[in-house]
Amino acid sequence: MIDETHDPARRSWVAGADGHAEFPIQNLPFGVFCPADGAPRGGVAIGDHIFDVGAACAAGLFSGAARDAAEAVGEPTLNRFFGLGAGPRQALRRQLGALLDASAPARPELLHRAAECAMQLPAAVGDYTDFYAGIHHATNAGALFRPDNPLLPNYKWVPIGYHGRASSLLPSGVAVRRPNGQRNSQPGSPPAFGPSRRLDYELELGVWVGTGNELGSPVPISEAGGHIAGFCLLNDWSARDIQAWEYQPLGPFLAKNFASTLSCWVVTPEALAPFRAPAMTRAEGDPAPLPYLDDAADRAAGGLDVELSVSMRSAAMRAAGLPAQRLSVGNARYLYWSFAQMLAHHTAGGCNLRPGDLLGSGTISAPDPGGYGSLLELSAGGKTQITLPGGETRSFIEDGDEISFAAHARREGFATIGFGACSAVVLPSR
Image (cartoon, rainbow, N blue to C red; front, top):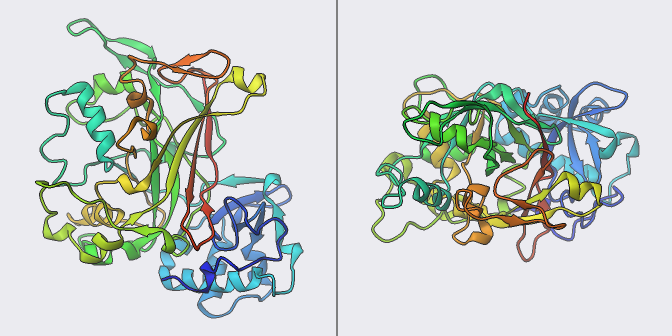
């Protein structure tokens, strides 16, 4: 619901928060930070600062359900906070907004400069599942391998996903090592083992699971949205040459398990309420979702109108002081399956999700090349090249390249909010 926390006229006593491109008072995302003189604990991003929720709780600044939520946020991970569900989270958001409002007494002792803190993953991730819900990416990638049949028959019936590797999830800013694996570009010849030569990024949104479900108890589609604690950016790094050799018959393995990079702030469903959008309209002739995946409310507001962009900055560009070059701009509206559908399908067979589990949306691409969410698509499978400032060219990622994602939600009459950094430099393989 849209309430006073979304008021675009609301101002904060925190210097620099008003009109901040990412974290104005209307956003208030949660994350885990580590100040130079302390241990990891949860906080809230406000402007260029982090509000220490645990310290504020110890000072008696919260009451009721918000106090319970604040105590959980003050822990080294947000798992318990996620598990409390929407009610305490909403109560905490309202009281945080009141505490940070320009009309409230300033409490600068509760602030930490974000630039002086190390960000951690928000939660201890027990399980990570990556979906394939971006239909334009699925069509473009499929066309490279199956020109006459890009989408397999099940795509428009079932949200496709695979179980990813939770241990190699990395916070933004941590370098990624190029993976080794088997490659085979010559059918009929033995494969070679070595560093990936076709390293790629995949532009995705991550979904943090809030309240879980009991083993054997599916989550109905009408209730699935209530099990989502928030959203982040996700770069599902992909070694395309390794993937092409190993993915049949069981799907991704070494091509995906070496690293996935996450933005560190959890943007809540409440903060994104003004930016809900109808779920993607199915083309004429597409099948209707099966009943367990169909819900009128989800059709009306199951999507997100969030702009997503990708930028690249090579080692040579950094050395020359050149800014990153934007490669594409897309939007989360281009997901064929909604987040509620992904969660409902994940549990449909009785699988139990737990607080802090992570779901990836799959690569989000727009219909046009300006919004493609991977180099596989931008380079047409390596057939064309992108020219960078200084004359360098790329079909896939080279060592030393830095890939950065950004996300912003904009709507007339509301403050713009962002997701924070999702960035990493690629290092040579070992």
